[in-house]
Length: 379
Image (cartoon, rainbow, N blue to C red):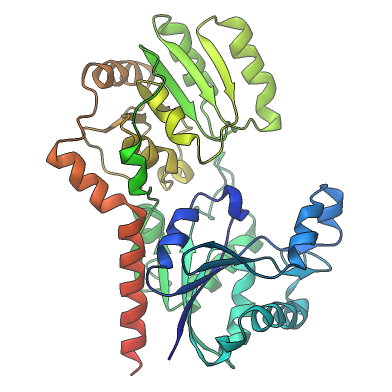
C-alpha cells in the first residue's frame, strides 16, 4: 500500500520553524504539507490575498517527494466551532482528493500541530487508513506570562493527546504533564538541518552577544536591560521581528545604550549568518513553568551554526559545553565570558554527537520508526 505523510502545520510554511523536518519526512514517503488555510475574511482583512490566490492553485512541489497545498474556507477553521466540522471536513477532503487522487487507497501518517483539525482527522478515519501523531508545540496549561491558558485551547489539546496514536512532545516537561493522557508519548523537540554545520563563518563581531528570533514579551526585560547596562564592554545585537508591544522597549534600549543595535529581520536562508555574526546567543526569557517547558529552536540552530548559547534553565535541552544555564544577572554575565573564552570546536566528538542527536534528519527517522511500529501493531 502506498504511504503518505500529511502534516497540518502550526505556522505559515515559508516561515515555519519545522520546515526542514517536513522536508526530511520526504525521505520516507510522499509528504503533503497543509499550509495555513486561506479564508475570505481574515485573508482580506490582514491583506494576505496571496493566501486566497494560492488556495486555488494546484499543489506545488517544495522538495523531493514533498508538496505544499493551501485549503480555502469561507471562515478560518480556528474561528468556527465544532458545529462546522462537517463543512471543514468536506472542503479539506475535496482539496486532498483533487491534488492526490490515489490518497484514499494509501496509508496516511498524519502529523498534527493544529489542535483544531483533530476532529476533522477523526472524521476522515472512517474512510481512510490513518495513524496520527499530535505534536505538542507549546505548554497550554498556562500562558507565557504565567497566567492560566484559555480553557477551550486546553480542552482541544487534551482531546488531541488522548485520541492520537502517538504524542510527540517538545520537551520533558510537556511529556510529563501529559503522561496520564497517552502512554505512547515521545520527546522529539526541535532540531536543525545538518547543512547549518557546513556554513563557513562570514562576518563576525568580536565581544558580541546576540538575541536572534521573535522579540516578544517572553523576554525578561529587567534581566536583559541589566545585562546590557552591566556589560558595556560587550555589544548586543537584536536580530528578528519585533512584536508591537515590545517596540517601545526596543527603542528604549537602542536610544539609552550605545552598545545595543537592532539588525532587522532575517529570513531562514540568512539565519545561519546571524548566529555566526556573534560570539554568544542569549535566551533571557522570563522564568516560569511555561518557559521551562519550551525548547527554543534558536538554541539548537545556533549550536549547529557553531555559536554557543546562554539560556535560562529549560527542560527542552540538557546543559552542555555548548548550552549553558543561567538564572540571574551574574550567572548570565559569567556564562557569556566562559563561552567567549571557549568557542565551539566542531571537530570534537561531543559536538558531533550533539549534531547527530539533534538533526532534523534524525528526528524524521525517529518519527518514521514510530509510525512503522504503530502500523505493525495493527497487523
